[in-house]
Length: 376
Image: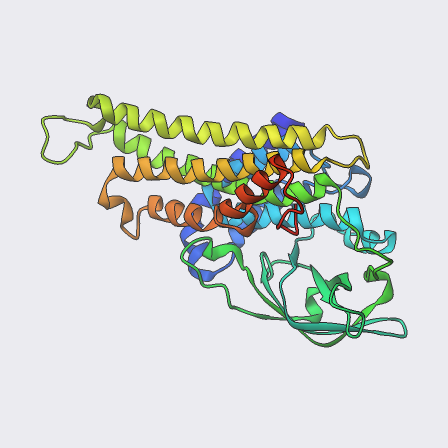
């Protein structure tokens, strides 16, 4: 299945690339890009096979999303986070919630754990919710939204994971960013919406923590598009380096004639490949865990450090590529500048906050507990 899915992803890249500028301009993946991904079956990556999905392994998931990112990081981001949301819902929600979600294995799911003045009240038959939820990537493509709803009157830690039909919500187009602009990471708004009880996971004692596979999949889903975007930038620069482009005011006929020019490019390749290998190692470690097994905090911290380091390596590779290409790479019609902006924004997702991840790693190493990150 791995080769078949990778081939399907590669075949979508020309379409995603051709529509990347439109995706960015319209603040959501372009219709042709969405259709290409849907035709390839890639919206069902994390859906169990018994529900009509692909149930792909973690390594293949990373490779497929990275391949999509080579064409358009925004589209890859939406595909990856939708798959991650499905995996999370499958791990913490009730059977009835999962059944409703998986009725269409190709449905897009958005999610937000960023409530803004949001709350829910238990009522006969379900949960009545109002408020706003920010940064719901894929919001305008999604059929379902998973939102974290604080329960009114149940204390600050009482939060319900709640699956809501997006048709019951409105969307405020609040995500206008320098990078990943096409991810439709807008704000969901609920105005006195009654969510049926079978779509709500009411708290029962301590909040349920997702298993490591679901928790780490969110990080992998955010990082893989960045690796893909860095590879996309390499494609652009390699053509310029190997072609007739000459370093300005030098005796060289091509950038590739410069020994340091060649080194600069291969060093960018090395850092990108290092980022990919780190990410795949994390995917393999998480996938190898027995079902239901816990992961020691020392191991979780180490894996978070690996992903954060990989994010930094993508940025370092991008800087080398920009140096090689020169200022023309920042022209609006050059895809290099879009890849650069996407990587600059995406690798600064809160999952990769380097000083917090490093602080927690030090706390774990010297047993200065507890850790400060609530997601570790």
